[in-house]
Length: 336
Ligand code: TRP
Image 1 (cartoon, rainbow, N blue to C red):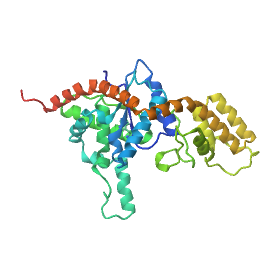
Image 2 (tube, rainbow, N blue to C red):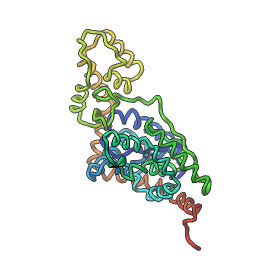
Image 3 (cartoon, rainbow, N blue to C red):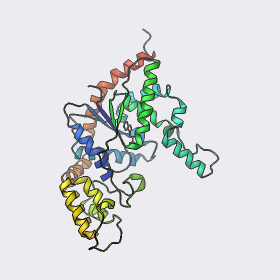
Image 4 (cartoon, rainbow, N blue to C red):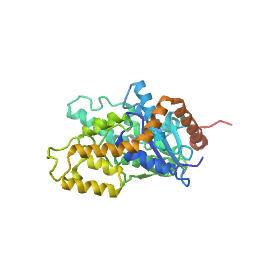
């Protein structure tokens, strides 16, 4: 197996939603099909430990996320699709990198700083209240995910840019201290990928609980779409498509022509109920076949497991010999 041209991880918490699809899954599925590229996609289940302590939910989320990626067409034969916890070399590398990571660098991580700030605002005596070492050193585990496969490019959301800077910093320190083994990975923030608004108009996100699940039943999908908040303009009043959540979701799925046609109808005046119905019909058509495949996969977790196991074998073709090289370069090796 070759090192990664592209690599990205998906934390196994929550249920995949429409925002995940247009922001991360759809572009990754496209890349996964390119025979000229080696792309690695993995379920970041160790990362999920910092957010959730319910084993059942963790397993369920891994199942749903893996099923969603496969159902939406991930080319798992061409790419490398695996589960982080099936690659024991990653936590080993994490410790090696931890010993090279300046604590001061981790002090500056956004997620950690936000936790401290919240404690300070709530006048907690201990600014680190509720902060685990997992949250604190999360960026080191992420660096290990990336460096383990010497990834060149890492497509992520804007919130992850700092983690990539930290990864480069840690890699450079390793290269300087021991041996030049690591490529400094580049962050790829896909500006063309759509950022969806959720039911309340804020960014669609698990943490705002304003998301529309990808693979609910048809009936539930319709119900969720009908819940999208709108203003109280009467049906005949001209409406601004650009500030409308219904329109923004439609735009993320439809062609430019179809989008322009809907925009024209907004300006003429369209009833919110009609716009929602159009959106439902459009998305439902796209999701119909993948939904069927998804439901089958959820019923047959063994099929998903087999895909992940094959992925782990491919990934370890790279990680086992590479970790061996890394260990030798730091003097962790046999005495003879
Ligand atoms: N931290 C990423 C997120 O929350 C997920 C992730 C874990 C990841 N390891 C990674 C992304 C390695 C890219 C590369 O979205």
